[in-house]
Image 1 (cartoon, rainbow, N blue to C red):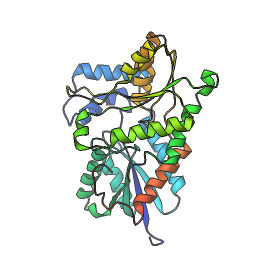
Image 2 (cartoon, rainbow, N blue to C red):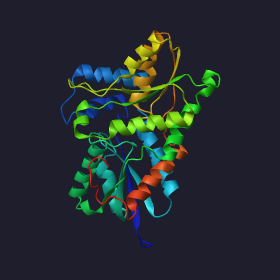
Image 3 (cartoon, rainbow, N blue to C red):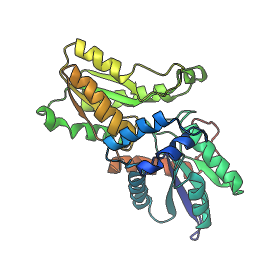
Length: 314
């Protein structure tokens, strides 16, 4: 890299409605342009109202971008783009290239690789790059699910809840977003990586008993990865568990799945069964998480980085 060159970094997140009025357009984008049914709009509107009328995801992603910029320092320019809402991935890429970035590292905001998650982000990025004639200038950050600093960040978020339980951990349930079970046929690394991360965090916390479950499964009629968090809560209640800490390791920011699915739906399910429910905060801009992100960027921008990625999961 010459003194005049800089590397762009594009943090990519799912997106969110910034207000109740944006919900129909946001859902239509997720549904590939098909307008959502009124009942679906009303349901999602009620969920947004339950968490204050808007998602904090855009603001939290911006905070992550600023923290990553500070960690990377001179020679890098960090931007952010969303799959399903503004600012769009294509617009953010155009901005980085226009600012003189010689290459751009795409970084999905998840430590876990999957054709249906990271693969979808990279597909958007590739499409945008092709439209700008910049396909040869894109690099892809790989997954970092077992990075020591990532594990430390998850463990730190869990430890922050200890005072709520008198200094001792209750039963801990690690959760992540479910995906269609068909990914298993293709050897998708997502379930394996999640299992490894949960085990590493549990070891760091010296937990004797812990569980893992998927949450927030989609509305399609196909089979989704399980077990579901609700099923695990029912089982734990039957075993006599009376206190539960949920650690949503599948997510790096507070958003609908943590603030509603966890804090409302699963909390209600637990409390109906006589279980005290607490949740560890999402990583957001935790310094150790930002360090792990920075390492992923450095790896992708080095000579050993993927240029472009040889595999859709990375």
